[in-house]
Length: 284
View 1: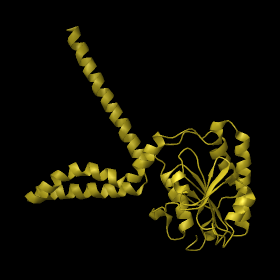
View 2: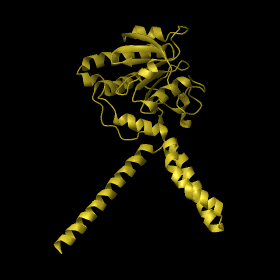
View 3: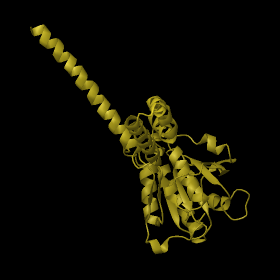
């Protein structure tokens, strides 16, 4: 009798463990894709499939019923395609290395880099010179650096200002910084396709967000139309960033050990100034 009860208790414990693991996995998956455009696409597919299934049963439509019965098997592969950017970002998160300069035990270099970036950013912003500066973190940017011109020089405010000065050969495109070295300039970054960006932002801002959607880089964007400074990270764009705020964010991201990030951060446009101060349409 005791053995029988023990066996059933073990079986129930296994079932409870499996249900718990599935619940955690489903919760993490929902958190990961929350507020992404892929959710709407997948929801549309599921609603369409359910609608066709109900319709075929109600009116005894055999052909449509046959197609719907096989649609669910295809839905698993469709999900991988629909959520391709999210799946790629999740795999990147699993393979992340340790943080930026903090991992190398040299926070002084990180502080110097932050000060240099802030000085260069607002030197360019005051003169309304467009800029796109990407700082590599744990996910390497080598493939993007190869699209530009190698520099491999120590980062300085004067060097960054010279690179982005209008009509110079490398002023279009972005620069990539690894630790305290300017790796390459004139680099091409992927453009974000998020409809939430709207039409008020141009390719420079879309490139900054696009790179952050693919990697964990921190990207500084300076608008050449308004001189406004934006900061992109984890698919999020914060616009109209003041000097002190930029310095604080860069210190948190590049010098201090980053806090554990919530799984599945999605794109969200974060305005930092009133709508009346928003840049004109077509801002680059």
